[in-house]
Image 1 (cartoon, rainbow, N blue to C red):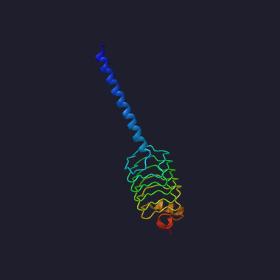
Image 2: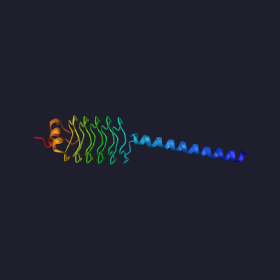
Image 3: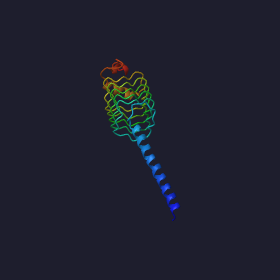
Length: 176
């Protein structure tokens, strides 16, 4: 192999390594955004992602999508989830304390043992959502569409007043 071909091979190899490093650094930057290390509101697609135990607390995730995402044991406390799609998401044992879930899609979501203390679910669609063992002290369910069995369960659990809306949880659920 002569000098010219060695030089060409070396340049090709170095450019390939530079491209690889650029790609790795770019993926790292995207990963840091995708796990919520930014305070800016981005409409992000987390559909079908495994986000078990991720801390999204205090973030603005307005209009993001979490369809079929696994958010089990995640911290979504005091997070702006207004208009977010959580369709068929696994929110088992998730902390949603003080979360803004206004007009969110929660249909077929699993909220078993979730903490919804002081959450605002006004206008959310949660017809087939599961709430077994959920904590709903001070949660606002104004205009939330629920199945009859879920409604009955939530009325058995309902206590408190939402500190933001000033509405009693039992009143927002139209409990007897």
